[in-house]
Image (cartoon, rainbow, N blue to C red; front, side):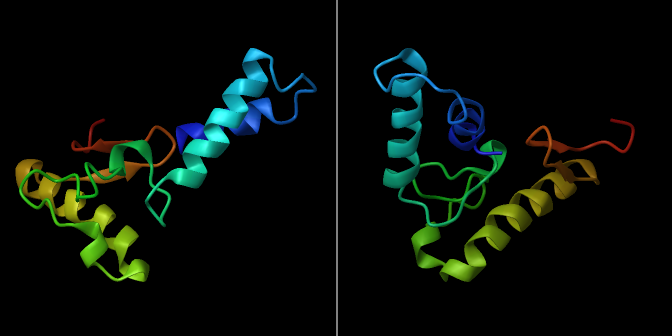
Length: 104
């Protein structure tokens, strides 16, 4: 899950004043989600770096990709990259990390 959304899922149900640390955190997370330049939500390990694909050998500007294809690129490109390096790659959505060994 996106860290801001994860924190919001925990803080929004709490009845606290907006000026409390929890209220301020919730507002900051809402602002971060709203001002994020990405129109696609990414897992932390799949997040863009400076608006570009996170794979070092790619670095494609995601704005150059059709919106409906962006997530597909940001998922497939690292998968192909890690498969070339280790022969195996699966993404763990629960822990937001690439698994590059069948024994992990």
